[in-house]
Amino acid sequence: MELSEITTYDGLESCILNSQTYDNESGTSRGVTDSLYDDESSSSSSNNVFGSYEGNFSSSPQHFYVKEKPAYTTQLSDVEIMKEKFAKLLLGEDVTGGSKGVSTALALSSAITNLAVSVFGELWKLEPLADEMKRKWRREIDWLLSPANHMIELVPARQSGSNGQRLEIMTPKARADIHMNLPALRKLDVMLLEMLDSMVNTEYWYTEVSSRAEGKSTRWCFPSPEVPACGLSDTERKKLLNKGKLVNQIFKATKAINENVLAEMPVPTVIKDALPKAREFLLKLYLLLSLSSMTSLGEDLHRILTAESTSAEEMFNSLNLKSENGALEVVNRLEGAILAWKERMTDQASGKSLVRRSWSFVKDPTSEVDKLEVLLSQAEALLQQLKIKYPNLPQTFLNVTKIQYGTDIGHLILEAYSRVLLNLAYNILTRIGEILQVDFSSNPNSPAAAGYFPGTRIPGLSESYVE
Image (tube, rainbow, N blue to C red):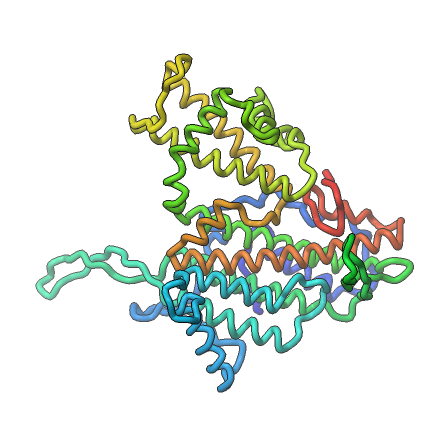
């Protein structure tokens, strides 16, 4: 991959250049003092997370596919596999050919997810993929992404007629979100595979460790990283740290794309139909009515959101979360509340209120909207803080529903592709953290491994937040 073709995302290019510098560095090296999250504040979502990235699309109006040569040679057996896969996609995963098949968009999303699981799994080891697995990924992901290469949108343009008259016509061009995001994701895909390929001739290795679940007779074996008794050398540690920085940038880039795509996907009708009752309940929650019927978590959330002069960090600490499941439950509640409150404010602004104001102390609708705006701002700030502290939470109920009922093939292809890449990046980052933790345990004089990942929970590296 040529350096001139590397796309910059919040320091991504500099990380790549530094990575190559460290790979070629001699045995003499300095101590490790930098952090994987030097530019954490720059991890923000935007409509175009890759700035002025230009995909290589054909200039012909009849063709909108990316000009890329496949990284594999097609064999006769590949054609048969492709026929089978696309037959299942066209059947909506209902092989009986009946009416129980899912939409094409959801079938493609599921196929991309299943392919990633079959190729990468949980990625227990930092080592190159087997050649067959690498070939399978490149071949089949190319097939599954192929519909996006032909997606277009019509835009108005002016054209001169034979008599010199200016006419306005609709001309096709590559669909904007596909044109912007798909080439970027392909580039990040290549970079992650190259990262795994570089995990050779390392100073760490893996041994199988068996464990048994409580109350179960079955034993499970998991790879456990090992390092020399004196720990990793400074050069090896620096190379591993720099690779972690690069993977972290890739993780943030894919996460930003995934969040943007999900934000663009419409809220399903099945959720909108349930909003009137939800708004009634949430308004009662907001007005401190009928709290006796709420769970303790609901009471805590209300108390935290209505507290005066509370920062997002203070609200998060007040939750006192113990697990990712608890964090996911809070995120689900917040997303539902934010959606319902926004609908409520829209109704108030348009003059149509679907909720009866039968309470005597609700006299000023304008004041009610102002208070809801404050509450909404607090809820959004807390939601953002939760996503920062738990960067790889499972999908929320709202997002799962958007995918389940989504009909836009382009949206679901981009969402699934970015999701599997961000999961792969996160798993690589986790494995790096485990190796650094073992290195610190073997050599107490080594720089503290937890300091490499401040402010983020990395399984295997730290069981608490490191500020």
